[in-house]
Length: 311
Image 1 (cartoon, one colour):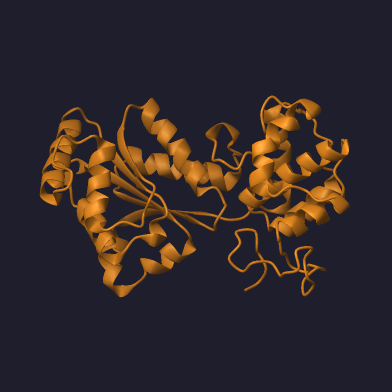
Image 2: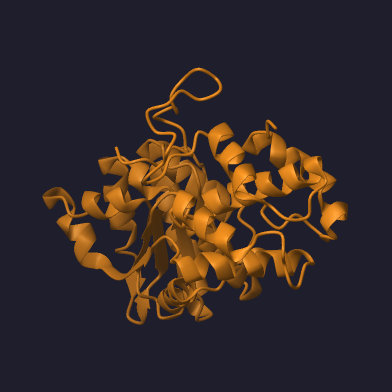
């Protein structure tokens, strides 16, 4: 049977919810703090982010491979900041010029100034930060996809870290990106920025045990306390094929649930997993399909987010 691709499966997800008794979709691809799987490394990363903000450490860096949960961590941080009524700005599009960066910062902080003028933005930002400091409060700038930032924008961000008073940094800056961001800030021309980074957090793919617990936890939160849809041996195979990357686990499990629903089955099988992996162009170590044509008459696309083979 031909399963639906990830995008289509996501749209059709409510179809299988009543079939399995789910209150909501357990493997939604959108980052949802309510479905945060609190693995040891995720707990540690979130604790470091919050500690860095509370202690006014200045620069905090969060890195991890694509799909390991960085954006979910940032969403959890945002929830914390909102609960604490802490002023923050979230820059989610990092492919910006320096002028566009300041415009977005001014917009997200709600600064009352001419947002197209860097000078006006800096004056307004400094005034806001000093006002917060009078009440013993801080402000936070969160930048996602930081590995895409141009050198000149990174330098502007470094200079923002100079805003401080006698009690500490006025602006806490959280930079999140893929592992290449770590290598980027190791460059000699960014040594001043590197020296200002006080906390670094790294998210790694799940271990086999974490993958199993992750699947069971999400199924339970969706309404199936003791899931039996994915047998232990199938979960082991899911882990191997997804390499323990949460986003890919979500996509695979979502497609498997849809396949079970379409075939009127309550338990997923390896054969179903084979079909899902083929449709997603998924590659993994020891893939027996490697070197063979897919049903669409082409090899997996090198740029596909589901193409995880050694490159």
